[in-house]
Length: 528
Image (cartoon, rainbow, N blue to C red; front, side, top):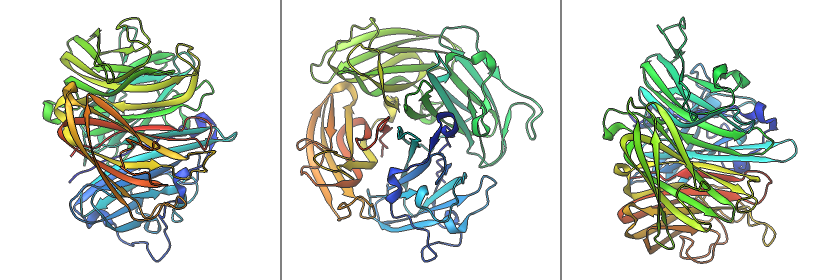
């Protein structure tokens, strides 16, 4: 049985915000007519455990589910309290969801949940599904924070996180949440490895119920770690204060998955999320690799990328980052040493590599030891100004062996909630990279979600085009050419599937111009 767990984020108090959810208009009603009074998760073969759900509270979440099967699907979300008790009034079903199509479960409009509720959701379906978590926070002065990230089914006894920060330089902070994916109590320890190569620190308490050592996490439970104890988080060790790190979570009993949410504490509204990397005992069950594909890299008009690596092995790694310009075909190489159980990183603004202004492309990390890699996308006010805007997003690097000939996206926008010509509303772009930088022939199919609430956006519509690309290519949905649709619909809110004759990796990024702050959320596509 496939299980996917989203991790909760309780940044709200730390960021001093109130709730607002742009996706709140989704038709996820919980009136008596459509509430199912039994646990749907026992009725269907495909079950995915989802996040701490937050309706009208400090922040809000929406879960976007995409039918990944070959027949129409019934997709249901059940909601449970943290103690695992079903909330029957909050169950929401969608029926007859076409293959590749999507439905949105918006907690803010779920009348079966009370303001301030935190709990666990379970998606179940008679077809396989892809699941995406969208998080929205709006500050008291209107500043917006937004993130979107995919959730993968992998859980393991060891999970590594290439980027963790404890109020580093009074700017960067992270909160990471460890969720139990197994059937017994999980007992975990956390090792912190510092970017400045000082000795690592391991947080491994004793005396917790059910564990000889480590933090105890009950079945379907979770614990969070942050710079402080906001909303019940466990503070990181004091020795990690003002540090930039990687972290590795090890379960001496049980299996876990980890989610990381990175944010600024200097007044910016920046928020980015990524999934932890399972350290498996073989390439087939590990998120690490000796060849890792980075879906996006850039240094253009103030936008730039930074790649962060973690090495959870007992042997130091000799690594190389090969940047490939999608326009010129030029390669730029950076060599890095990643200490045993350590971390290293590279920004395109470093002198090493000589990456020029105007670079847009992708990257490949090769190493003599299996590594994990995450890429962050950031924006300055202008090239080299080092004055940062709120924009902040992240995506996972993908081991080459995980690249497939299919990329699926649960959340694609074109001019949703637009107020033309002043505001273009919600839009996405999709970046597709061909493994090895070669040529691929793509077929792109997009299906509108007829249950969405964006004005004028509910009409049933399917768009299919073909496109040949070399290296990598970005489809901007708001554009009037090469937008992935082949047409120019006035509004679109739905899902997209890309098939290719060559292995590819891809990411999507959602943006809007309706709010100030960080309106940018990037997520990895789902493979076949």
